[in-house]
Image (cartoon, rainbow, N blue to C red; front, side, top):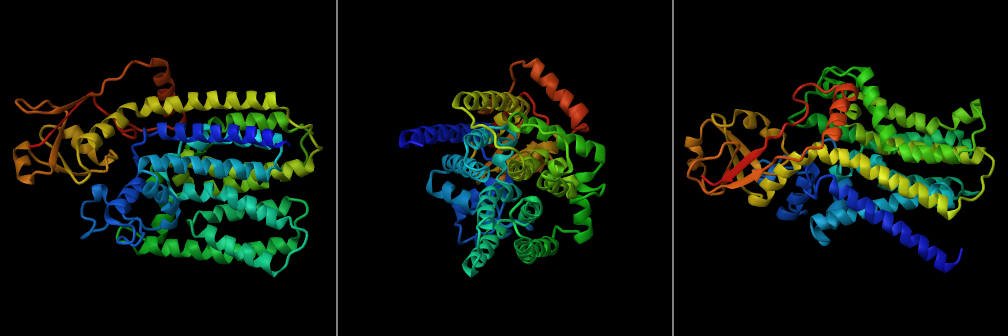
Amino acid sequence: MKASTKLFYCLIAGLAVIVSAGLTRLTDDGLGVCWTHNVLRNWEEFGFFHLHGQLVCNVGGVGIETQPDLYTGHRAFSLYPAFFCFHYLGGSTGVSIYYALLAAIVLWSIWQLLGRTQAAFWLAMMAVVAPGYIRWQTTLDPNLAAALYGFPYCAAVVALLQKPAWRWPHLAGLAALMLVYSAINWSTAFIHAMLCAFMLVQPGISKRRFFIYTGLGILIAGAVVAISLATRISSAKSAGLVPMLMEYGWGNVGYGLSLSTHTALLRLVFVNTIGWLAVLGFLAWRSGWQGISVRMLTSFFPLLTAGMSVLALRNYFSHHPWMSCHFMLLGLMLSAVVLKTRQPLRPALAFTPGLVWFVVALVYGFGVLSFYQVSKQQELALIRFVQVNTPRSATLLVAQDKDPELASLINRYEFDRHYTVIPSLATAESWGTNTFVLTMTPPPGRLVTHLDNRITQDSWRRRLLAWYARVIAHRNPGDKVEVGNDYYLYQP
């Protein structure tokens, strides 16, 4: 390939990465509405080393010195790259750059896994603009990090496994790679399981290498899982090992309250189908269907392993179905690698069909994500209203007598502001100067900041969202946070 052609494809890939990061930022308007963003802001404000690099997620940073709120069970290591970008590259802008870097890494990894072909290039491009890739990105969830960094990890391990001869440096390199990757989070164990499944069905990988990898995986990933469980159980909020496994797994408590297996499967299948529809269509188009056979079905063992991993934590993943998409995509890509080795060589994909598929995937992804924007429009507007008009260290006061509905919902809004529900507005002035009253009732004779949160009608999208909530998600009344039309902020 000529240097000019390589440069052209690099520019196209760069454009896809920028678009992916831009679409990701649009999902939360760059507000950082998750506990992980609170951690980044706390590290920035109070000092990363002062907080010992731990997952300290105190809202607004309030009480961080006297009562640090540690998020136990997850590994803080998963957030270090995001914080590096946040600290050195401009706060929320740095986080957007982090999204772009992740998209570039995933794009390169898929291209590398699938043989660095034209078809692999366009498939990777489609993956990073798919709704299944973008929708959950802004959470910066440690489990999500395990799946995303799993792409370059799998690309590196597969390349190492396919070397014709192994010596001690190769084994040491594999062990070091597994140690570094497993330190991200306990959920890296799922990716280790997918790789074991891949090695069982991929031609050319010896059983000796399979047993070496499996043994190292059990030791390293098992240790990380054990440490995470011990940390979680030892926290003051924990009810013990069995209740925790019931909540995240198959119990009818916590995430699984009133959740049936039918509803869980419906959510997961629907979300993954919608999230990866363009990718699945492209793979079906390029598959060169040879009919169903046992040999063909065993190629999907990595994908089946991904599905079993997700179902092992039925309650957790069905409560966060979009998070499952990244694990399922990685299983799908590993299965695609196996299928490629078992099928006749296909003609190289021409530029024009690849570009058409990418454009279709981009338009489709933007369309699906627009539904999410519509569903979160009012909530994001309220969060922006509070964040723009109050300092992070402020305390929000909500009066029970004036705003009983707002008082019952205040704990569900991701303001990153400390809040207190007070019995009456009459006591608001006693709270000091760095306090703001948030109310839905206009106070007479007060200088207030007002949010008109009425939205333009978008009836067909809202009808489809209502259908999804009723038929697919089976949501109960109160599951979705309701947002009003008018809000007022003022200092007492």
